[in-house]
Length: 319
Image 1 (cartoon, rainbow, N blue to C red):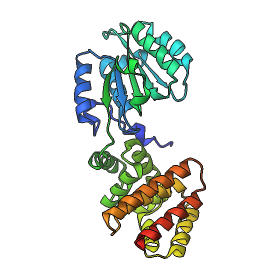
Image 2: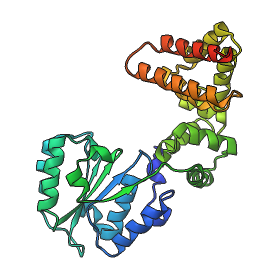
Image 3: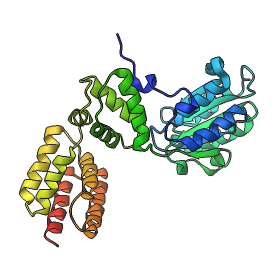
Image 4: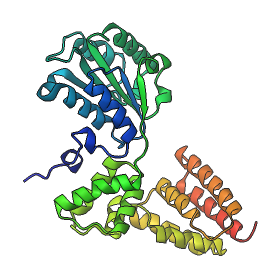
């Protein structure tokens, strides 16, 4: 038997089931209930419910006929002018089925469209506004041209808080007969960085190994640096022991196949738990950011991380 993908199995199907975006859900559900839906722009990080809310709107409006009245496109897969000129136009020019006088087009990752494609989309939105409504989704609204933003009601989604993600996890725990201790909830939330979809994927991967979801097992799935390992590295450095700090860091990276950027993220989080002066924390945070930038730009991560550890050694010596 093929196991279901939990992100789909536990995907909210009603407004009341969507967590973490209460104010947005309240306003959008009111629009859907009145059948007075304007063009919408959903902006915010991945895994916060943007595409799910769009699907809930469509199902609420069209009930069993939703598939005939709904077109979903992903701009990052099909970016370019042809998406707007062909698929969108062909769908938008036909009438809707049922009592709702318009159809809905959901364009995910709209900020990935080229400027030319966005201009074409703007014209299409104007030409077919009587027969079609657009729901656009993006990570960064600043990458969507102003003429499109001005034609939409903009909703800004926030990263989910831990309590909201925990509600979802506890629901899955009960139905899948898992055991998720509180400390594991913390690791799952930290590992997913508020992305509920990512969190559920990590949970399913972990549960495929054991129904008892332990922090160590989650860390294995994440292939991320354990906080206690990072603390050892930084403690060595702050005590002036550069050699052991360097060896421990390289051991972690090679043993667990951890990338330089993942190590940087772990160090960034650990800095603020260190027993050092706030001014030193600020300086080390700044240095960590500079190191991440150099790694992203293509510098050798091992050389850059050694340089970062040297900064910790100097900070520990009061220099």
